[in-house]
Amino acid sequence: MAQIKQFVPKKGNAENKMEFEDKIKKYRRSRLFKIGSLMLVVFLLFAGIYLYVDNVRYTSYGQISSVDRSGASDSTCLNHNGRVLTYSKDGISSTDAKGNVIWNETYQMQNPIVRVNENAVAVGDYNGNVIYVMDEKGKAGEIDTNLPIRDFCVSKTGVVAVVLEDTKLTRLNVYNSTGEEAVKSEVRMNQNGYPVSVSLSDNGEVMAVSYLYVDSGVMKSSVAFYNFSDVGQNSVDRLVSGNDYADTVIPYVGFLGKDAAFAIGDSRINFYSGTDKPVSVAEKLLNEEIQAAYTGGEHVALVYLDTTGASLYRLEVYDKKGNLLFQKNIEIEFQNILLEKNYIVIYNDHECIMYNMSGGEKYQGTFAKKVSLLIPTDSTKRFVMVTADTIDLIELN
Image 1 (cartoon, rainbow, N blue to C red):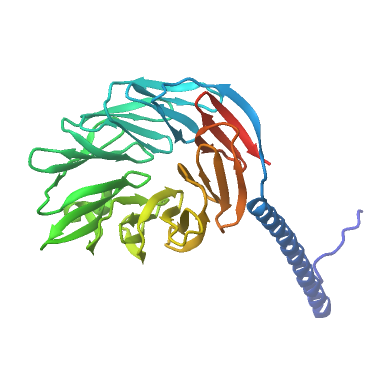
Image 2: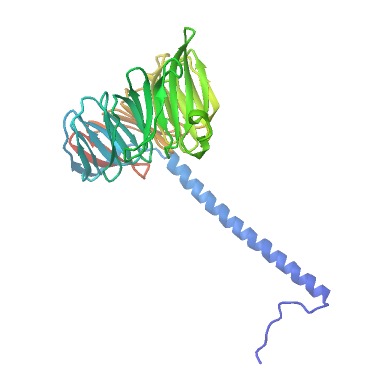
């Protein structure tokens, strides 16, 4: 008969039982220690890799690929979630980094307005009454407003909010991506003020509006949040939260990720938190004139003139909670600023500066070609570089 090793001590043998339990405890402690040590090593390894990638400094760049591109000389290029969006008075198209045209839409517009939110694109003519809505595949819908368009925005899901001019009032309507009217509202100067800026959350369910009005001879602004989901159905006009600001103009409101928003005025910047009913969580009063403002992901960048004369501009970068991450002097004229998750890129047609979100410099250099647009990729050191004649894939090294 095969011999079977006894793992369980005999009943009544207290000494053997205690010895057995002690061995089990030691084994468990040893196993936990080994697992904890392994997890610590893995954590330190990934932390080391992250710190290296985050702090590595590049000194040059190389061209990986290049394809020819053609377009009207009066066209404008934008980032369409990694693709090249090109538009003019005659039409709009989306092209991948290899030069392949993904879709193309023709129209005739005098003053085209284009709004991009990741894959969603909306294009309409100022003072016109038609807005085309596109996604990554092409035309998704068409909105006929029947009234002159003044401004509009688009969510990531293709929902569009439009400011329309009527005879005696202003309308603020919301449409789904296929062009169907979802919300219709009237805005009267003597009640609400005039809508200066409008923005939609990622899912299109929450809308932020900045109103400008005059109260007893004093210029005031209000920032209002409307919720179109079940959360806002019991609120009057679906208004779920808002704040009033005296003696200020707020020309820019927007969302930062899924649960934060911001409002930039001529004398302040405010930050809001909340998915369904955003409330103010931080503010900073400004005593300098903002020259430019940029957003991306969960960050906001403000640019001021450098009054000290040490450089041309001063840059401040904030997170979605209103914390100042860093500030830097900028010594170049810039045409655009890119805000990504872990870095910020400042560039013009011939120069580029790149920082991490701690303010550490990652790259500073010049371009061999005149650049119209830089598009980030999944790699922090690779970019799609759009020029007048080519689409190049470059890599920092």
